[in-house]
Amino acid sequence: MTGFQTLLYKELLRFWKVSFQTIAAPILTAMLYLLVFGHVLEGRVEVYPGVSYTAFLIPGLAMMSLLQNAFANSSSSVIQSKVTGNIIFILLPPLSHGEFFWAYVIAAAIRGLVVGAGVFAVTLFTSAVPWPSPLWALTFALLGGGILGVMGLIAGIWADKFDQMAAFQNFIIMPLTFLSGVFYSVHSLPPFWQGVSHLNPFFYMIDGFRFSFFGVSDVSPWLSLSIVGACFAGLSLGCLQLIKAGYKLRR
Amino acid sequence: MSPAVEIRGLSKRYGKLQALDKVDLRIERGEFFALLGPNGAGKTTLISILAGLALADDGEAHVMGHCVRRSYREARRALGVVPQELVFDPFFTVRETLRIQSGYFGLSKNDDWIDEIMTRLDLASKADANMRALSGGMKRRVLVAQALVHKPPVIILDEPTAGVDVELRQGLWQFVTQLNKDGHTVVLTTHYLEEAEALCARVAMLKQGRVVALDTTRNLMRSVAALRLQVWVTPDRLPSSLESGAVKGADGSFTIPLARHADVADAVVALRSSGLEVSAMRILEPDLEEAFMRIMSRQ
Ligand SMILES: Nc1ncnc2c1ncn2[C@@H]1O[C@H](COP(=O)(O)OP(=O)(O)O)[C@@H](O)[C@H]1O
Ligand SMILES: [Mg+2]
Image (cartoon, rainbow over all chains, first blue to last red; front, side, top):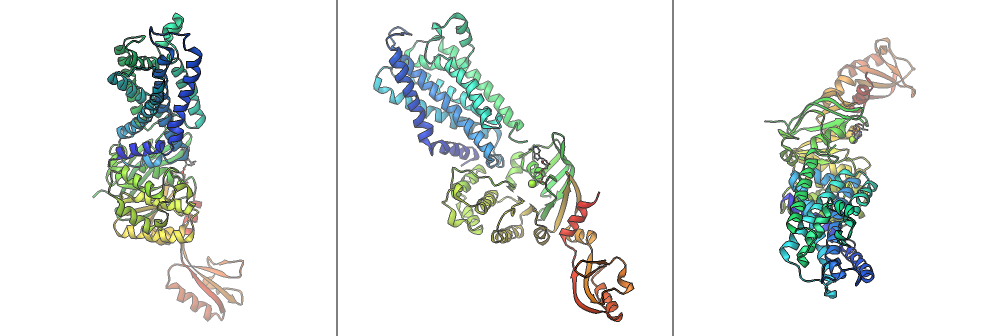
């Protein structure tokens, strides 16, 4: 095994060993959202013609869980290693900057994908959602998981303490996810908030992902793909620069 | 052939504190070298820069000829570091920890060597124990084992025996001595100066980020600390030929400085010929502890 494969394996093992918390718990949370919002709003809201509210909600919830768990994986791994000091086991070996980066990001994306797929699987009983177009779905799932994996890595590198990490999570990740149109179509918002929503990259991840199920979306999937792809590339380059400079990792 | 460690003009600040101030140091291949100094002298900072855990503000550091910044991968492959802090990953067992550490170096079939280091460090019985369940001494052994998984030509141990029982200390030094005989360069920091004296042929002393002494252990002890003869005599006085520089101790002894061992005989003759009865006598060899105290109290 190469250094990269070992770090990836370690990162996967880390969440797999506690999969009850890292996989089962977030799936349950998504189910609760579905039960509550689906029950309250079913029949009252029709976002797209012929698509029930529950059906509309499911892809968004799956994507939201995917994003949150990808972020949680890389951010918690890095901050824990930093606080306990065992990050040195990764800093001492001859891992390249790229190996370090990709191992964390891919592990985060895999955790996100597993949780997202789990949410989708347990909602199959509702038989509300059609089978998605696999290429579009996988592209947006991978890019979304990748982006949040990178954001988690950046947050983990930046934060010195757990409460700084909590602030990053509460003041950046949560607002971006909740204002991304998981629970509603941004077209139902007043024009000002519609405009604001279009500045949120998470909106394009959700919208593009939802397109793969219904073939309809608020904006063109190609536009979403370009924006999401550009975000991933930009954040990745920035994060690689941080790693290369040793920012907060090598003092 | 490039030396094991070469440091030129290395400086590092933390805020207003000058942790390292233009340090030059060269450690040859195969040496057993001690890096000594009081707390806060900069030993860990120096080691961290060599390991790439800290970045220097100025100067260069090379491990086996590889610059720690430009050729960081080669430099890290050549170096094994036992950190001062007792850190561990609570997710894994001892064997998993060592396998993963091997993997980071690209070594996947390393079980024979892992078994050997575990045996040598008396860890074999704990191979499948979780890291959390180990005592402090056992965790320290795992740190040593982790530093050795890739058989690095240069091994640096940062206070490996702090708070460790005598048994482990002896076992550890036996193992490290063997590694040194096999050709590995060993650098250690320790507060137990008798350990450094017994093991290390050469010593650097650091004070406030500067190298204040660098020589062979023998030379340092000889040049700075003196050979002395301690005697208890009746009646309680010294012949005039021995009086200069002698110190009377609270225990009634006289401590007489000597230039060399041959002078012991002359001193004894002088005592006898002046009719004094010697009730007890011992030769105080210069030791590293004394040399260290003297060097540190200078300036
Ligand atoms: N990360 C850091 N931030 C601020 N000061 C530091 C840091 N690391 C070390 N220092 C300071 O640098 C000085 C040298 O520390 P260190 O290299 O650990 O000394 P030693 O290992 O010789 O005891 C000390 O005064 C210490 O407080
Ligand atoms: Mg130290």
